[in-house]
Image (tube, rainbow over all chains, first blue to last red):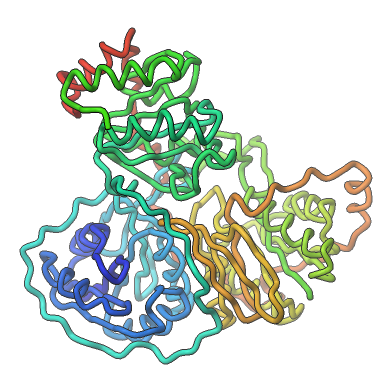
Length: 317
Length: 249
């Protein structure tokens, strides 16, 4: 039994999602190898070699892999799967993009966004926006799996695996990278933050997001999230959306402000350890999942919250 | 250019799914069913391409029960030209859907297939990518913008860190994200007109595709319940509880 984990990274830094996927792979059992596919990603390969439980790191480097487009990853991974019984990737927009291509090429039904490993062939995954948890057994010879990383603890960093260089796929493919606009932010990453402050439609404008939600987040060292309604209304960019079709988060503390709590939003945050809801509508569904609910007008509550937090050691920034 | 738009009949977006007491699945008896929201966005995009002169024919296809004709009629009312129903009452997994769609693509010869990035019932997010791989086509998933640029299709994608733009050599597969467009409501005259548009009914066997599931469902259970907590009276009480009781500050 051998499992191939596809590393999540940006050519410079290894995402901690990778160690979480390794932890899911360890639960399946057998030897766990990590594939680092990128351009100039030698440092990432070295970092992957330090993850505990990893047997070896395969490192493929080349122009075709710089942006980890699905077609190039498919070309790289499909032949490698001769030597593996399972492939695991994070259920990120990268993993969701390439994994089904690999599965289709291998004539395998992919198992998406698993939250638990029950046996080497049996997995639990949320369906219907997390309103049901389905346990499935796969009869396919090889398993192609994406992993919801918020539900697995990261593997430790005491490993010392060897790094083996392999050839990148031959180009060109029928898709090419044109450009990207990545949000630059000093705030923690939404997926990894210990505290998330999220705003909803009640914020009413992008100015209010900047004036109210962002300073509160900065005071707490928190990431900024948003409901779909707020993103659709243009108050904040799409990469802040928390929910069924946005990001799935599970921080220590999730503060939902002016968010009513639609099913699809709850699907993205209800595994948070502690949930705080501030909403002026006392019947808002968000209060049904909140550990602490405050019925209040956010325009009054946020400045008060900033003052109270300052008193307990969170200086305003 | 011909555009193929696969659509799926699913539980309505506003209905909360309930697990059956015997844990064999989700109870869909007497539940409102609709077109998957991402599929509506796909239909809208294809129809706009036709209205802008980029596409000349839009063909909608659904794989599902007899009643999926309702969703196909909706696609026709929104502006699709004709429809194909591949009728089956059996559950069809994304891999099998992709294989049937591949056979339809080979018959119909579209230059573009636009479909939803995921269905809100099983949340798999696989079919478009699998179809592209089986056809050997490039893909632009999670699209928030699609432009025809000469022989290429330029797709702006919603990715974890922001937006990414890729150029695809047509023919290609595009999957839709939420902000690609706002689907129209079909007008009454268009709903009436849609009733007369052609709708072919086929079966999976017509395409020689084996739809036997690869995954067997052990059980479908309620998610772990989260109990409602307490309401606090003031911001001061909230901060004090977060610090001393919850220990998260």
